[in-house]
Length: 503
Image (cartoon, rainbow, N blue to C red):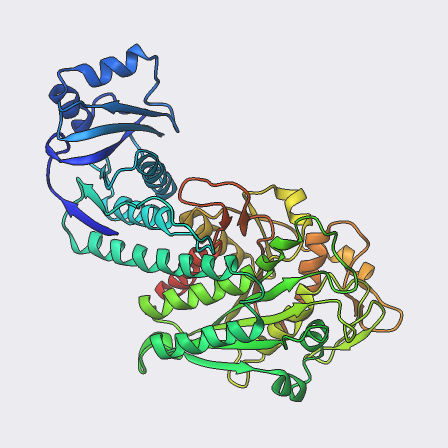
């Protein structure tokens, strides 16, 4: 789809659908007033006649112009707020998503957005472009019939033609592409997306984007004594992988000298629960258990294009957790890469096991220098849904400043997070009679126990953990988010890296 910017006045723009934001605290807006006058004062009168509160956040009023205006339809969308503050990026993203949805339902070929009410052109344009592209990203299916035609063009009016606006648009295009890339990986059947497939995807990124890539297979994992990843994957015919991608800024720059940062993703391509078998209901969505790994792959894709002035290393610990004849068992004791031993009480608590090896590997520098800090992202626990619901991810960590920066990056990306505590008093509940620790706690505070377990493997490197089990997959569509994989975390991770590069 083509996205373009024009200086045309909204009452003169020819399009199928024109979307106009209406701010609650703004009594008179140039674009809205011009459109009302051009309609013969019928636009606002019709909204009032239908008792439509166009200034209420989330409200949508669609006016059929019947040839009165160049735009065939005008959608007035309430964005809330007030006259003093600019709507947030998330408000603009949602506006874009609502506009795309309205255009699709009306079978429009083109849609336009008026940003004349924005006082921050770069932020508004970037967010609208991001929302449009995310809303437009198709869900890949295996259906034998094709759906209706999609939008051909999106026009943004009212934004200044500045370098900052162009840069914001370019950044949003990269972020949306990377998020869509992650969505596609998560939505694919697990028969397609195996650990080996993720390794192949990384190798393609090496050729396409110039990243340094290593894919460690069973032989290398055995040599490195990564007993946790090997154990989780040993019940499947699809052998595990540990994937490393490295983005390096240009030599001689400040970012090349000040140390790398590491992003670590859980890449369980299918989680049956192993011998601690999951209930059969909804097991088909367990292909999403590699959403953390997909987020890291997507983030590395965007980072390679945005070229921040800092070294970034991405790691994906990938395995398929299956109940085969060679599967690991409850009661087994695993020796991890760090040398710490773990007694397995539940084979369905496998994500923390593969991450234990990956975090320890990343913390020691993976054969290079230690990173400045690390963030892992994982669909780790169902308990986080009980704690925070289906729209907020859990975050915890050892470095308050890092956690705060991650939350801020999530807020900017429209991916909200809430900090959970790492309660030291809970640690004794993971004591084992026969090993250094167990892989589960006492049956309470499941998300916190997951974080406490992972903390044992970060080797003193400042670290934060994102539990995205509740937010990685959407049961129903939302503005700019379709039903299915969300691609959650890609944009937050990129935003966090950009913040680190600016500092």
